Image (cartoon, rainbow, N blue to C red; front, top):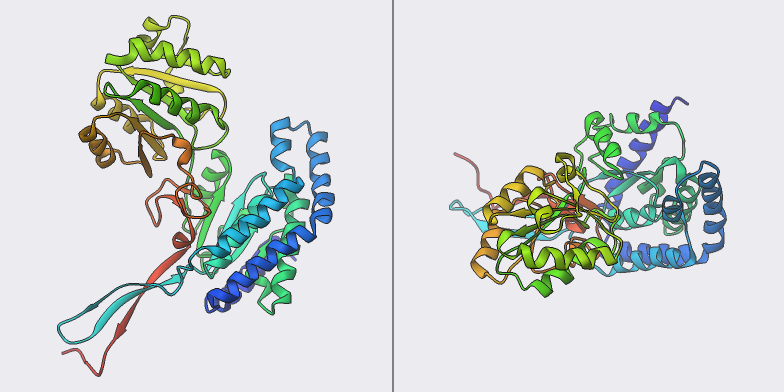
Length: 418
């Protein structure tokens, strides 16, 4: 079978299954997720055996140790996948929720009811745990899901997908509601992206290159998240000890993720005090600092920052630093170089903090806390399917509700239109 026909057959089956999944009760969906979690734990040895094939292939190719680690399925990570499914099962089900009902002058009642999107395609790289995480969120929200992981994790993804599919089948539910694309053929992604009549939404998770390829080649709506150039602005009215703790956490706690701070902006009125203070603290953690001309006048041995540094998502222990004249200049910098991900202000000026929340146009804006909290789980969504930095149809970390849409429901008692 040609890859085009194979992908079409898969998508048609998913679409058919989605109609049945949309009608399931919350109790049945929760039971499914709990049984999936238990099945993953029972299959731990099998999952690790398949994962070992991916790990060996990665080492043979000379993949960096950090990337090999991201592929690894340890007992702890398998338990975390199972626990993640249990957490999703415990979340409120958005499907069927009526969001408002109003009465028209002619007596008809109008409301909006949440329904699943239908079929969601997830295209992702490296981490095999995404297979279980994405499946749980999509199925709990009443959708079918088509998963296409990277070839570097193909054995792991197949194994996880098989365990989950067998659980679906044992419950008498449509197995096609969860499908893992098992071919290594690179054209599979291109063919999936053409199936706008069967697939309702594409969510790419991975590097900027993958996301741009998907966005440029898809006929299906795409949730875009190119990169996370996250800023922290330390205002003149900041508590500088608080600011140091926030900045350290935002940069150092886990530098290789999209919500880590990449640029630090410091008000000139506190730069003489705060810049040497934060420089010393960051350097103790191995951070390389690249500074603007003003910052280098205060700390002379900072590496000169070039224009490209303000655009860069480093994803490592490197930080760009700029001293700004005031909040308007900080805002201008964020608007020029930001990626609409997450921005933070550290200040004790209440009016300015509210102005920051109102004016900064990123998907998450924060006052006096670390950008590392820009995460669906940390924000109370239970889990996230991804982060959207485009505004249609969702903006920011996406949870269960973001995997639904709303339809109008209209109740009458015989009214006809004049």
